[in-house]
Length: 81
Image (tube, rainbow, N blue to C red; front, side, top):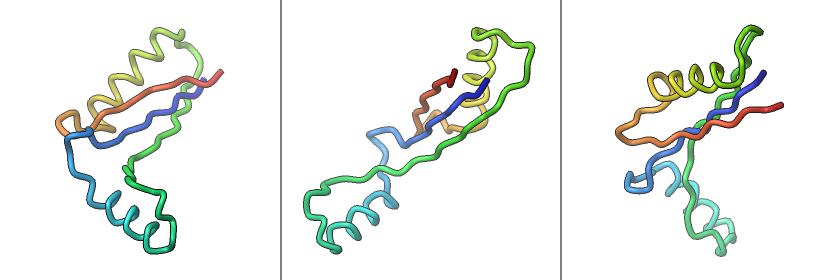
């Protein structure tokens, strides 16, 4: 089983790297781009022995405690297959 975890800044948190990317895109002629938010992506493989609910609980715990800083970041988990 595989899980994907997407981590990004909360909307209320400034994203200087996203602003820099947005500015670069606009200077390259992509004037239709008005905002860019950058984030992190993790693909996690789980071994056998966990049912879907156990896997979800484990990945949620990992995302909350290790992959994301809950003060400034949100995360989203999805499972493949």
